[in-house]
Structures are given as structure tokens and as C-alpha cells.
Length: 407
Image (cartoon, rainbow, N blue to C red; front, side):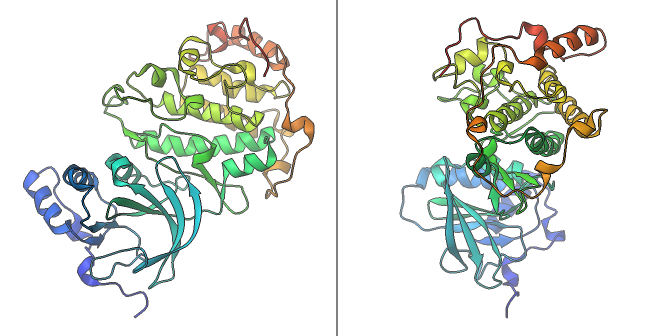
């Protein structure tokens, strides 16, 4: 019957109150879940997946077919404890290719429910992506519906959104200031939730922000590089891999140095995303050639890339990065909408968006040696120096580099 799942593949809430502090309980749970797809509420799935990857990575080249994992959504229904492409669900169409996996629109065959599915090779999968993502519960974060191993791949099922910020930006070349700040504000709400749950995203950019059908609401996605923070709000260890995580143009200096990280890294990336939305191109690349790590570590933050026609409230947003606190930036965004100059910000750009090709002037922003808002910002820095902490990117000798070659 439609909508009735196999009860043998469902674990109720009381049965999911496992005592993961006890190793024997963990082993028992792993024994129950091994080799089957189980539908259950979102609980701490990290022990299961870390153990799963540890055991299966050594055998990933084998031809043995395995189908096991966890389903969190009631309309994704395993059959005989299996959930397989072409059997229990089918692919409707391809959505996009990613660095670590491909994304599809899929449909459950029993219920007709549609969602997105990201297929990741087992060799590229991080168990932390599932353990951090499953712990989140925010309207500004794409919801995870399940994680299932199919042979040599991991398939992550998630909420399906109709649009992506990167595509909107590509079609419009650059975004109006008020719309860009609207998207930044909502993205910071998502980051505030992540950091409260002791999760770092570490890859905040327009490609990882999805949109509602009317382009009013944003949803943060892709937790493939996410990390868990300790009780002091720091990543558990400094990066020691062969390549730095994340997107180079949005990388915070501490990421480029390989230091232990905190919430500041995500906030830095979010402001790089704002520069991308305002200018239509990613920061740094108009002035420097890759690799950019040395410039990011040694140069002051790229505030010279803020468009000259931005109002003073936008300047406050970027100045807040000096403190690198998501709350200080969120406060600056709120001033944009609720401050004394609210009449300067219209709601025209916040109406449902129909992407159109911008004029040539918008697609190629004029470069200025000094933006007019910066003079006001410097004066405000002088006045606020005794009363504000961490407002200081401009107090760090921020200005246009001595040698800049356009293009």
C-alpha cells in the first residue's frame, strides 16, 4: 500500500535512545544497522559512519555490493531494508556536478516524494559531513533526509530547492546592494545556528547557497568540509593535509596559514561572498594571480574592492569583519534595514526576482583608487576607537595596495 514502509526497516524513537557513551552499546547498534538501510529519527549518527568508513575504505575497490545507511524522512521508504537507485527510488534529472559529487533530482517510487540526492565516491566521503549536518535544525539550512551507501558511493538525500545563488549571480552579473545584503543577512542567520551547534562550515560561497522559488529566502548547503568545534569554539586540530580546505578566494588568513579555526573563518568567507555578489567576480583575482594564499596571509583584507557607490551601512558591515564576529555583522545588517537611514534602502530588489541581463555598467564595475565611503568610514573609526572593539580592518592600515595593476 502506498505510504506504508517495511516495519522491519524502521526504528522508533524509544529504540533510538542508544547510549553511545558505552562502547558495548555502540557495537550493538552497529551490529543492528550493519548491512541494512534503516529509517529512524535524526540521532548521533557519527559513530555508525566513522566505523562504516573505517571498515569499508579498505575494501572499496572490491566488487562487493553493499546497501546500508540511515533514512530520516518518512516519505523515503526502504523496502526489505534496502534503498537503491532504480529500485526504491529513481533519478528524474541531473542538477549539477560538484567537486566531490554529482547532484540529482530523485523520486521515491512508493510515495512519489521528490528530493535532491548527492552521490559521493566513498573515497571522497567524510563521515563528519553527515554527523555535523544531521545535528542542524534551522530554516536557513538545507535539511538532510538521509545517507545511504550504495556500493562504492555514498548518497546523501536532502531537501530539493528550485534555485541557486550562483546561478542568479551568473545571470545578473552582479546583485543590487540591498539584495546582496539581504542574502548575507540570511546566510549569517544560518552560520549563527551552525556555530551555536559547534559546527564550522568552511566553504561559504554563492555555490553553496540555495534559493526559494521567489528568490527571497536562502538555504546553506554542502557540509563536505565542515568541522566540529570543541568547547572553546576551536577546531580540534590545525590543518595538516596536502591541500587547504575550501575555496581559495574566500579563504580566511587562519585557514591559509593552517591554524586551528573558529567561527571567524566562516564570517570572513561570508563577506568575501558579499564582495562576489556586489562585484560579480570573486575577491583577489582582479589584482593577483593564483595561488592566492600568500596574499591572503600577508595583505590586509580586500576592502578596496567594495564598490564606490555602496552606502555607509554596507561599509559598517565590512568594518565589522575586523571583529570577525557573526553577531557584529548581523547587527550591521540589521542597521541596514532598521537604522536611521532605512528610507535609503528600498524593497524593490527584494521582490520576487526575474533574472535579466544587466547593463554594461553593471557588468563591468568601475574601479576607483579610493571609494567615497572609505573617507567617512575612517572618520567613524576615529570617533568609535574608544568605544568599539574589533571594528578595525581600517585601523590595520587598510587601503589600496601600493602596486595594483588592473586586469
